[in-house]
Length: 344
Image 1 (cartoon, helix red, strand yellow):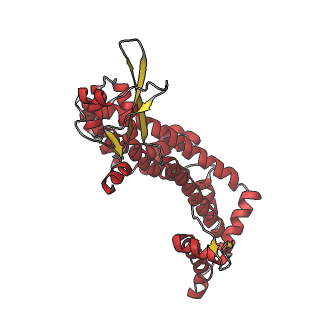
Image 2 (cartoon, helix red, strand yellow; image 1 turned 180 degrees about the vertical axis):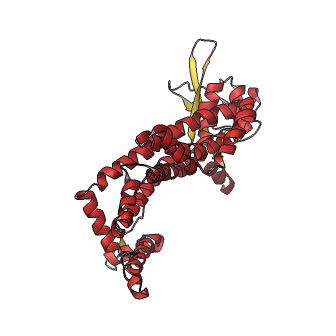
Image 3 (cartoon, one colour; image 1 turned 60 degrees about the horizontal axis):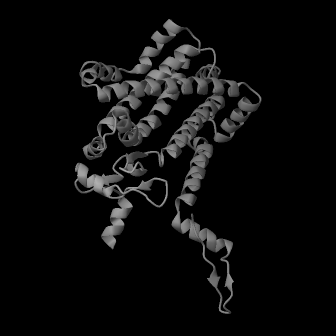
């Protein structure tokens, strides 16, 4: 957020800055607000007039104005909207199935050393294969309907999430797990409040790749054998040498992929924090609660003797004034608190 202060005049009366001054302030602090639209305008201008200057026929590279006109006609007057809905459904269904399977297999791999040594190696070997080449097999087995496209999309989105889930669950600081076990936390609580928050940054990195792979798998399967979808529509446009419609479909695919990644990135912020409440009963029967906060990916760090159970219990303080949890700040502190302490 940009704060613009009032400018005092000589007579002592404050006045707001002019619109030009506001624009200069915003552009000076955030030059990308001006640079990004300018780069887009230059790219479209080069695309619009560049082929004509170089002597390239507009049949091969149509200008963006014709591609935009073809997109509008196809979405509102043609069948591009129905093809777009089918392709999005195939990609999203395959993406959901792929990440669900990746979470299950990744969790088993992280917790079972026997499974990791026997099965996980074969999964990594399958990952090295060009999985798009398996699309003809799934189409031959499942037919030309939606099922074959969903399976191909799920297969392509499975492996990026699987690898990141395994890495995220394994790369957890031992001090955090030792604290939880010192406080008699169950394995489910350790997974829920320590391992899973720590793995979320890795998981979202895999999801950003998987959503693009799912869309790629759906389009590739439609290329091989389909009667509907954007891949089928692109093949028909190429057969008719309708290049504006082909470029319009490519723009739609890029827009869908961009929106999907932006949604995942917006969900990523603030998703790696976990909290665990410990209930203790005193000798007089009164119950008090203490909070131990964890944040994945190293934002919280254990300080002091993290595994000393007696010292940790001394730091857990009951809240006698209010009947609600009170945070424990003795062993886990944020990086901002550490920096504030160093500056002071």
